[in-house]
Image (cartoon, rainbow, N blue to C red):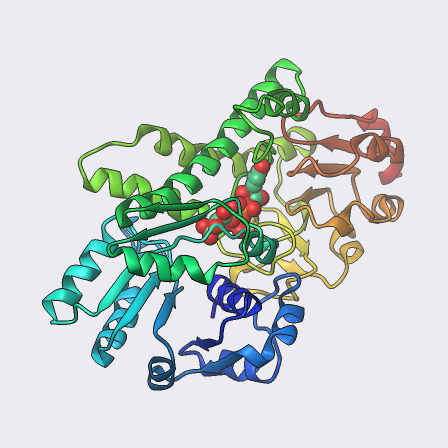
Length: 433
Ligand code: UGA
């Protein structure tokens, strides 16, 4: 019942199916039974409410396996120390299901290395359980837009060993208008990795273009628009910024690189995609130093901490690296995020997380916009200016109105866009005076 499982269960209930939602975490199941949604995903609470008659929640494998034939697996597959995907949770679920036997269809929603379906099926057959079929049905949900992505997807991918298992899963999506790609299990597994790796590549590519734009005086936003209008390129995922985060892209790119390596192939391009993404977060430090010199003793306020807006997810968020790097440089770091209550958080040791943006920016030498939460474009920037020690904004997402900020008296730095500087010496003196 994480981001993928809960959304999948609730959306399948919305399509008319009876759904049993299972998780080992009793607190989570209790919350769901009480009508509380354990994650923040826009629209999910309403969809649960609308479909509550078709949903039930349990921690019991017995209940699940007595009532259900088709079983969607949506456990996480975090990276191991070697960069491979950790399949221990997947294995535990498969073992539990195998112990109950019966005629079933396992549907893999978790992102698993290519070959996993074949291994699981071989193990089930070796255990004398040929009645359990296996279907790879990767998910392409973006957090923050997951319901829309489930109910109006670009495609549904179904890889099956037995035709009839694929048919059964395809039938569950009746009512969803999207092309269905029917394929083999390894191919379906690869489509998932290749899609995430390609999108990550697009982001690292535009981030490198942004870095060159900074050096030559071009504007990456216009470059991305000019490129994206070419249908062969497409305009999506060409937003330059301080790098991609989240529970999927960083881990999946790493896992695909690792998978290729394990099979004897060095995936050079992905090595660069990963490195560019690491370096992109650190470029903010250089920009800050350019304006304020050494960061020792300086105060930097981070606006936004989640890996993107409209989620409460902090996994692999750029803010975590940035906050640690800033503290490594000797800066004091404060932060505000609408989804991260403070004043402390284990992922952000030493960072003061404030309840209001104005509190976070008080006395700051610079503000760094890390996550493009809509409320930041509506901030009272005059009040921010009055509260800060220096009028410097580094916009890690090219989200704010640079012209308006400059008119308000800020020096503005985006990513791959021309910096807008107020006569900074005057502005600093005016503020310090
Ligand atoms: C991503 C994919 O978009 C989904 O299709 C996929 O199902 C999911 O991973 C997964 O594998 O489970 P998600 O991680 O929720 O979804 O978020 P995205 O909207 O893809 O954003 C990922 C990161 O890329 C964010 O940090 C975002 O800020 C960054 N990004 C995105 C950019 O820096 N520039 C862009 O143009 C787009």
